[in-house]
Amino acid sequence: MGVKVVIRTEKQKKVEELQDKIAKAKYCVFTEYRGLNVENINILRTKIREVGGEYHVVKNTLTGIASKKLGLSGLESYLKGPTAIAFGYKDETAIIKVLIDFSKKNENFKIKVGVLDGASVIDDVMLNKLSKLPSREVLLSQLVSCLKGPLFNLANVLQANLQNMVSVVNEIKLKKEKTAV
Image (cartoon, rainbow, N blue to C red; front, side, top):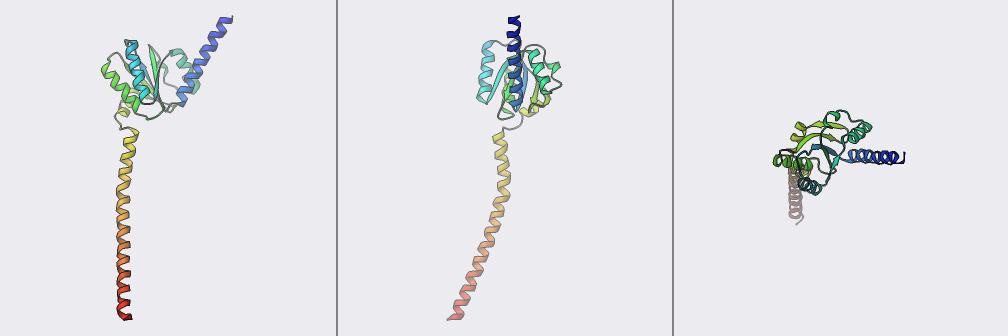
């Protein structure tokens, strides 16, 4: 009896850990790593860590339990075969780009499905589209560039009005000096 209690407690902890990781991550990507050796998986883990994420091999049954507890539906059909999950905590596109690049170099590696903000299940087609988006930093710099142009023009217009006003005041001053003499 004591052994079963320990095993159940361990599994409950694993389920809770998975729930916590899925809930905290901005997005998760479920992959099939069949046919990859340990060296390739470690290379992938390193690349994912470099962009601020984690990559863990998971048990399908425990992942299914964790996803049900989180209210995620639609994952059941993807929880077959060897499964690992990439958890992304920062830039939404960085890990997806790493995974897609890795899948191009390793034909056995497959991207199954993704979960966005711990709530929305997105398919591999949408993940592929997300991978083509520029990174967060690039998008922010593009936004700043778009905002900077009109603001710069507004500043020039306001500055021109001030210069005109200074010219008018100077002319008035000169006229008053001439009439005062």
